[in-house]
Length: 314
Image (cartoon, rainbow, N blue to C red; front, side, top):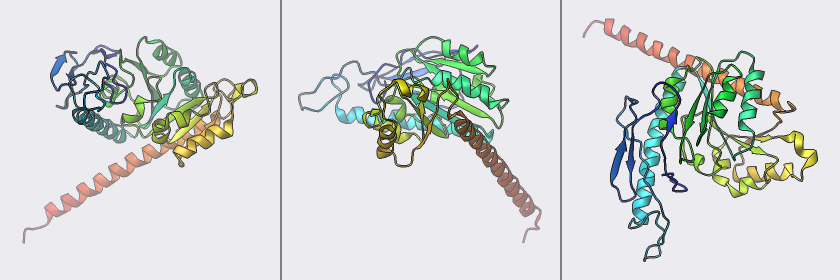
């Protein structure tokens, strides 16, 4: 279950020879069941999703996600889910840091133009190592579009699930040929609600708002815009044909997140794309520098320990 909307997890499918993995599910009453997926994982953390099929109000007047389950119990289950997700995210982040990979989590409503933007971006990066993880409830269409650009991509189908989580992404990373000192872009399931709560191990969340949507989206979905470091205002080539207030959209985004950066662009016309590509290149350079600094620090620490071992005992 998603901690926000209560949707079912469904059967997660990841492309590749080991496309299934084990999920340990927690029902709303605390009972568990597992369904096997045959993909081994080195750690012992369980991937938990309480199932909530209804949303009745109990006799006490408290809102409960499932019959017979108190609000207090549901809150505890949700905290457990997020804690386990965050542990997986930290594992992902460590692996990415060790390889100097700059990872972004791209989030938006359906139809904002994420995949088209990704395809155009990969072309403009001109040789920059990049890999993509695609998230959708069904089909591999988007991953196929990415692979047509020459970049490696793997598809995660979440079934009834409304978002990617760190456990899914970790398995996908194992099957991808992640580029050393490169870029990993994760296209999340189209949803401006639930992905806000789930850390995938990325450096930043990037929220994409199309001018074909309402400029008040940041006010309607504040958690997502608050969680994002960057907002891409996409499809600006269509502005002459629309009644969309750009200044209001940016003001609303900064009302909920004063620190959010905004890039206005169009994947179709190319306007604003150089600023976006420069942002990506700077991020990749920063991840590479951080890896080198970490390696240098480890080497220095090893040298200090070796020097201490060579000193005579007093």
